[in-house]
Image 1: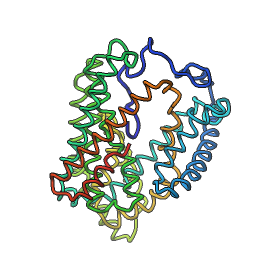
Image 2: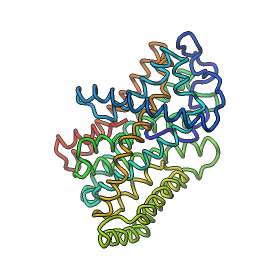
Image 3: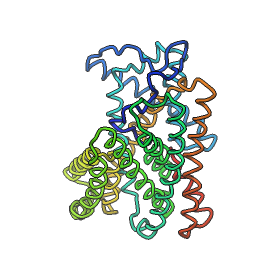
Image 4: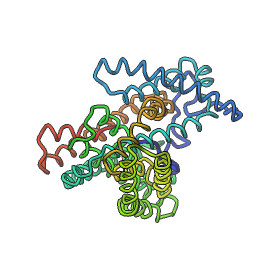
Length: 398
């Protein structure tokens, strides 16, 4: 799933106790080494070392990726995979544990989440809402089609997994499995999509705005679906309602109540000829509050950051905010976020031809389902063949 997995995942959304266990280097898969305790000072010191290693590896992989036409965000995810248990931990498990001890991971998560929230705010600052409004029908059609098709295919795959056994705990019902796998396959990784759009220089174009709008809708919808799964599984059926209503109220509140304040901030910046420190601090506080609120209602914090950025008036205010936030975010903080997912990937869990076959089926259902559906939806709403292919490709950011 995108931008981070939900904080609470449905119980049983992993291999059951009776399932065959994959092995890596002869050890049982999924069995982590004992977590050694660390003092705060040790965690901080380790974090600095981890940041240095991650940035250097990301830059080295990025150099190779650029030679074959791949964006930096792909290089950062690949770098995380190389530094994780799938390669580094397989070759030198002891050294990998020293560099990335389990007790220090929480600090890396927190820093990386701050980075992605700041980045999505900058993406929102470049988002042209007037272009999205002009193509609102197309964005909605692409988003709905891009969710429905892979959701249906993912549901069929979930039924196959249920019948195969070993992938879910006994208490997980088919309904839960269908929604969970379907949502996982249908979601567009919003931060990955935004990074690609930004790196390719199309953030302020009709194509970029359309893809970002559809991606934002996809992201919010997927979190609502996951809230339905969690609600039905735990007996708290209001989770999905709170997530959907909270997202809509947040958007209305930002554009209705917060935007007039932002307009005054823009006027103050124009009068001063720059960004006053108190305005910068207030904007950061609003950003943190928006990220907290959307995360609280069950929608990922990046959604709150993006909406606040999109509501900020274009002008000196947005340019100053971007010039202050973007350089450190994209060069220092954001690589940590994209590398972190790879640090937690264990390719050794796929230890049989059957598991690799299921992986291929999941990949095909996710990418082909979303790609074909988004292409058809874009064409039916007036996009050219080239535009439809571009949108379908961008919506397949994972």
